[in-house]
Image 1: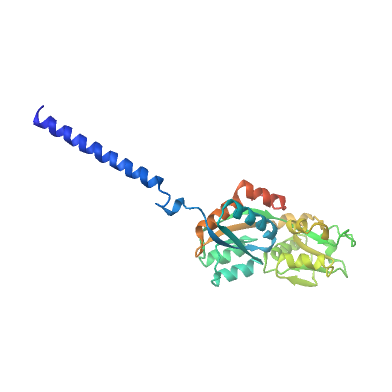
Image 2: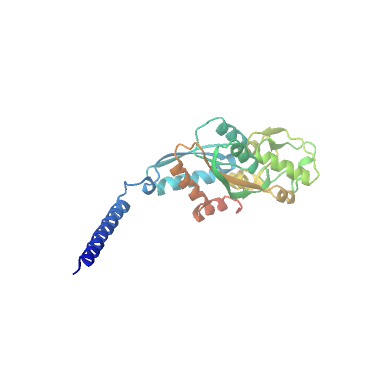
Length: 266
């Protein structure tokens, strides 16, 4: 063998050994569960700020998440979307924000407090909640303007109030409620306690109330359907678990839970 051929063979042997070493190192790295945080499962507490109308559905999904992800805990803060948004921009620690309108989500995104773009995960439509049996024979939005009828609306600063205003404007109607409530659950409670004859709330809230109220559909509600966006927050204390919870909400499994509650597909 010539000196040149011997040298070439030696170079190939060294190159082959180096490649084998690299493959072995790569295999060890990929099989080591502690080699990177991406392989770790979600753990710890996830704090979710969510619109009041999501309470029943999100509590169901929270329990499911904790079961599917051992070592996690989901805590919720439900309320009017505008109040929650103000808390977030004010520095309240939270991982996820699920709002009842794009307008209230914009309060957070305008302050650059969201990580990435919010995604619409459901929609919701209004319905009139009346006393059981509908004793006042309410059959339309116009019926709510009858003299002597005690009607409750959400405050226009919150999504259900903004939607109710759109619906009333679409019908060319003027209505003076006996009270404006700061979230949709408070408006519904007034009817449940018989402190009001009717309230304009979401279909999902009427369904969640069961036989405590009776629902009345009205065509103007089609002009005021709310998109519900969800977003990971920029300063989320637990972004990994937050992303996993959001994935559950948007999954086929999560959408089934939300659909059963009366939410519409995005």
